[in-house]
Image (cartoon, rainbow, N blue to C red):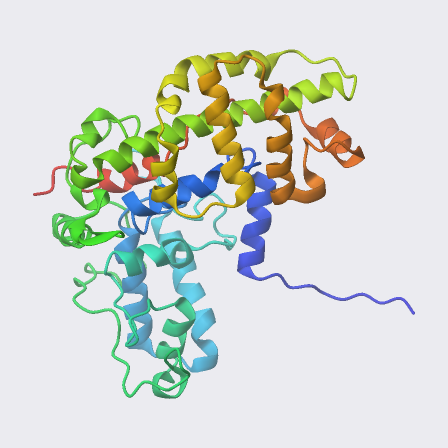
Length: 404
């Protein structure tokens, strides 16, 4: 008997699907694992940040939403819908055309009034906990969004437990010391992502208190950059940022060298795919990425070649063996000044297969042939160094530029 039904996807599943569909067009490619390095250095220098972050005022807007919902006290079964409605309404209130056009950075603005899979609270949650906008649980762990839902639903003492499964004796509301929302917050008027002077001062204090993950006695690099003009700093490892990094300066310099190494690695990958299309698949190709590889090595080779690999591994911690092998062998290839990357094929192929399985383009089988048939050199962006979220960090901190 034939039948039909409905499949409902979670917001997380939708977000993952969107990343798979649109990741390539936005420059997010990680065939062999270089983004592991990106994430670990970025989390150290800029705790709580994300490549999805847009504007700093969301760090206030989201706690204000929770405060509003707490005051309204919806029934437990209505909480999820109530918060989704508040977030959706917030997007609409931020969508307007002023004298200078639409404000940038509105999460979901491009699809409003349709719902979005990764709304503001999802995007900024880690930041809210890392930056001290939401306090820690009684057991010292950060609050999760489901935890907050249970608190707001009124079942805190029955629902909240420590790691051993024992209930907490009492659970305090985790949002404390927050400045008041602006006048008209609970109305229907338009809102902006620009910070008032009072909001700037408050968030500057919060961000200047963000500590280094490896040394809580030290401020993070993120904290040290609050209030400073950053637009002229192209990379976070540039001299102007290094001069402010203090104890993190050597680490930051190695991060720049690792970023350069990854740029060359990405260029090597594209050159290898292009070469296999021609040699194994017998499909003549323009030397688009093979020619570009030489330019990338000329631009970034000296910086990458200076990397102390043992110190680098201490910085980033354990890496999957195939990823470590790719980085190590690429560094050796750079130092050898060899022009042809063919000697790197096996190590790159193993690393890609460890991540992508039968979707690997470098595989020496029919799956590899099929994947290379789909690959178009002209649509594969040229390689660039890892950025460690620097563009997002600058955009966030631009809202605090000049604050005392």
